[in-house]
Each structure stands twice: as structure tokens, then as C-alpha cells.
Length: 155
Image (cartoon, rainbow, N blue to C red; front, side, top):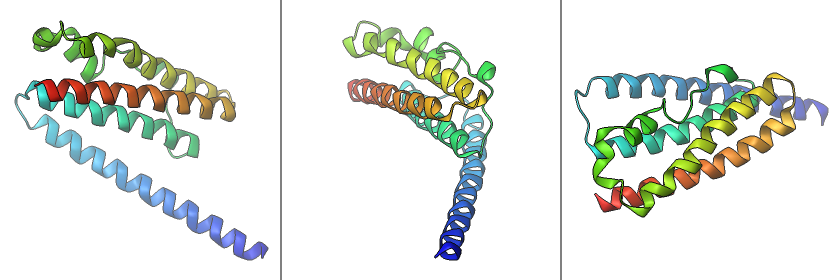
């Protein structure tokens, strides 16, 4: 039974590492594709921002699994990411009066702050706290994604 448990654990770890490696390769392909497009529409920017938030949740999850290192000081704020630049920039002018637009700032800021706190808790060896922060971050990220969906429907 012990040997079977060890084999199962080894297979699970190998599978996790394989999935992580594939996700890294897909991330590189995604970055290359995005950089090859000279200009994107507002709708495309919002779609990319949705994916960005899901990928950040994935990065923190991978950090908790030990596959990825996330430096807390390197976690950008909510103005530095693609969504923040769009939100603060001229491309968003047409949506600023919309109620969904005004709801976006708070959960978006929480995603970044919770990611930073989770990375800090993990770096200090507090895995339970990092896991709790990941859960909160995931909820805030889902809120952001829902609001982005509302904005996309308006376009």
C-alpha cells in the first residue's frame, strides 16, 4: 500500500510538472502572438485582460505547488498591467460613464494586492495563509472577469 501511495504521488508530481511546462510554453506563444499584433481593439484588450487575470491566479497556484517563484516585490500594481493601462488610458474614455466601468477599480486593485500578499506569505513559509490569499484573489479575479464580460457586451 505504501509503495502504491508513493507511485501515485510520483505520477501526480510528474503530471503537475508536465502541465506546468506546457503552460509555460503556451504563455510564451501567447506573448509572441500578442506582440506581433500592431494595434488591438478595446474588445480585444478586454479579452486579453480576462486571460491575464486567470493566468495570474494560475501563477500563484503554481507558486503554492512549488513550480514557480513569484517575487512579492515584482508583483505590479493595478495601474501597471494591461488592464490598468487600458483603464487609465484614452481607450477607455467611451466607457468611463458606465456603471460596470466604475465597479472595476476595487476588485482589480484587490487582485494585485492579494497576489503580492500571497507571494509574501509563501516566501515566509506561511503556506496556509498563502492558500487563503489565493482563494480571495481568485474570487476578486472572477469579479474582475465578470465586470469585463459586462463591458464586452456593451461594445
